[in-house]
Length: 286
Image (cartoon, rainbow, N blue to C red; front, side, top):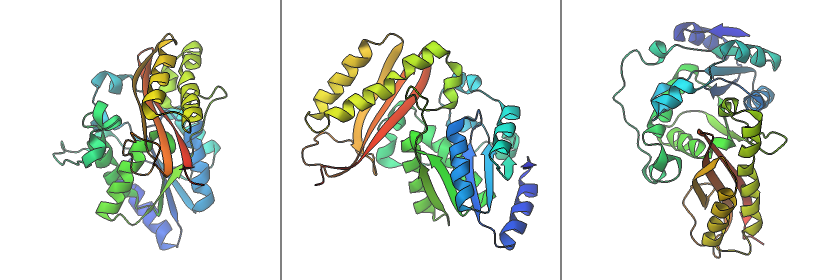
């Protein structure tokens, strides 16, 4: 695996590869890699000639300085994991490389800024859009791969790609889960085994909500989710929403909805913020 820390060296290498007609797949990450990230690399390898993975803990997308400070950084282990799945290129820039000067550029994504992650993490998506734009310009991939766990982030980046006309294809990849159902996340590394078992109730309550979709109202489902989690010690619910999976418009009445439904949840487990979601395709369609 080729490793680059400087932009010019990476671009010179990738330019030669593209000149030779090779397709570039890109997996942007913040490191602390797990099987979910590796699944993205595997999918990218199937669809491209060269796979680039970036590892960069982006400071501009953290609205909580303590969260940034505690974010796990495991570069040596990340390198070993990427090599194990045949990743071709690692880009691991420094903060100074990515932000030589403080950026004053501001992105705003309208409605998406007022719901779920946008509502509870002010400024988060501006930081995401800023760093992803930089990485897309640097790598210039043919395809870029993101996990479904960060569903709202994917919708934000899709909007970014469409509006700024980035010449690439976005690929949304399925959530990879632990045996107990817990969605794999770098933040899970901050939880001990007992806390991870507690966190698995997020998936369990999503499945409970899914089972209620056809026979209960949105308010009834939301009430059931809150009551379920109130009985689980160590979990503090931040939000649970039922939304259109494609636009993330909040659904208040399921009776007339036809399409893909997303059940989205965020909660704190022993002080660690986790998110998860389920997508139910073709809801209400016969």
